[in-house]
Length: 112
Image 1 (cartoon, helix red, strand yellow):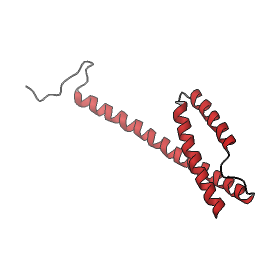
Image 2 (image 1 turned 90 degrees about the horizontal axis):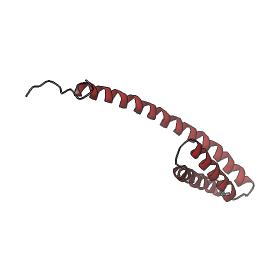
Image 3 (image 1 turned 120 degrees about the vertical axis):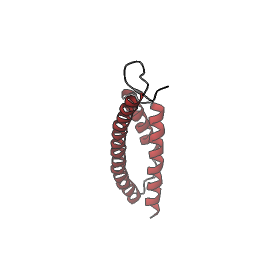
Image 4 (image 1 turned 180 degrees about the horizontal axis):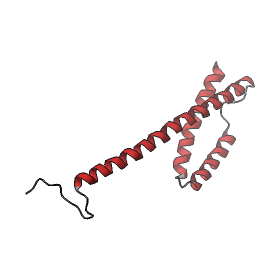
C-alpha cells in the first residue's frame, strides 16, 4: 500500500477534489451569506414601513389586521413565487409569518 493520494476517474487526486469542492462550497456560502444579509436589511425596511402603517391605523382607530389586504398579498406573493420557481406554499408560509409579526406590532402600537 502507498501513501500516494488515490486518483478517481477524471484524473484529479482525492486531495485536489477536496480542495476544489471546499473552494466551491466557500464561494457558494459567501453568496448565501450576502443574500441573507440583503434579506435582513430588506425585512428591516419592510418593518419600518409597516410600523408607519400601524401608527396611522392607531391614530384613526383602524383594526390592526386587514384580512382582505392579507388575502391579496398572499395571492400576489404566491404568483410571484410561481414565476420565480419558488414553492408557493413555502412563500405563503413565509408571508403568513411576517403578517403575524406585523399584526403583533400593530396591536402593540394601538395599545401604546
